[in-house]
Length: 362
Image 1 (cartoon, rainbow, N blue to C red):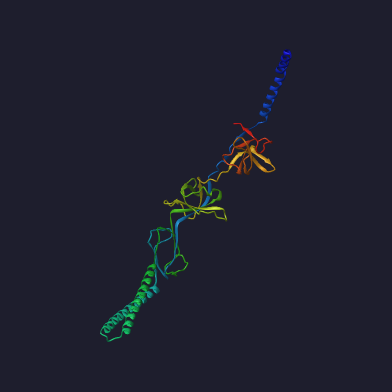
Image 2: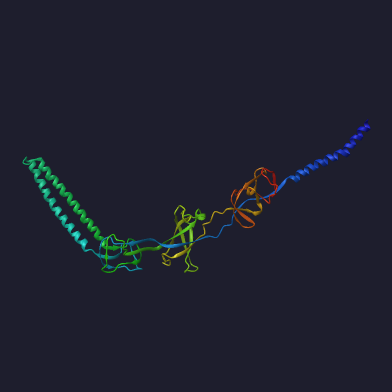
């Protein structure tokens, strides 16, 4: 009996046990081979493009058309086109005979009103005394006092009219409202000018600082801020650049052109730059919002469209649909669908599916 048991144990040890070990090893090998190993990468921003270059127009920091405030004939002018003038400097003088006559008439009306007022004051005073002596009625005394107040108001109105005409008469001397250069003169000796007309006599511009207006495309609008510096160049001044500064933006996109109106300022104390010139503005700090890119071999094309396999926490695969942008050959832009922190599977196998467990190989 003992021999039989020994023989059976030997057969189990030398026969069945090795088979069990081989089967266990085969199961482990199968699981090892069935495990999906993948390489991953993170999306990166697209390469920055060239600095933004835009065309603009130089304009004076201040510009005004000087018109006539009073009608008259040009007596003389003292400033010519191209002259630099100071604030308050006399540019021209007008002869205003009609205004002078109106002023003289208003002064005479004032004198008449003052005389009538003095008489009314004397009369009101006497009637007040008669009322105290009970030789006049209160009604008559009140009428004389009211007449005096009426004459006083008439004096005030006449005096205001004289002051108005005298103030208008000062406009017969045309002066510069600010310091600058005369860019146009459109009057001659003896010429009749009308008050309130649209005929321009002078055009004055302040050109020591110039404004530059450019239209920034919508894709670059968010990167343009006040205080940014830019480089200004003119086609006729080869190789010479000027520093400009962004001073303000419109704050909204123009729906017609989808651009942001931006104003820059450039120093022109040297007088080299001419207002009205065409200029090229280079904005190094303005960059379009760069989309993310990923290697082209990470894309999965199925009936759902372009997809990427992302490795979530715990090694679980999650398939996401993405919107593609520009194709750079070895890489492609991802407009929507992933973030910079997404771990994307490279060279995904055809059998890759949602929820599959994978092992990331560094």
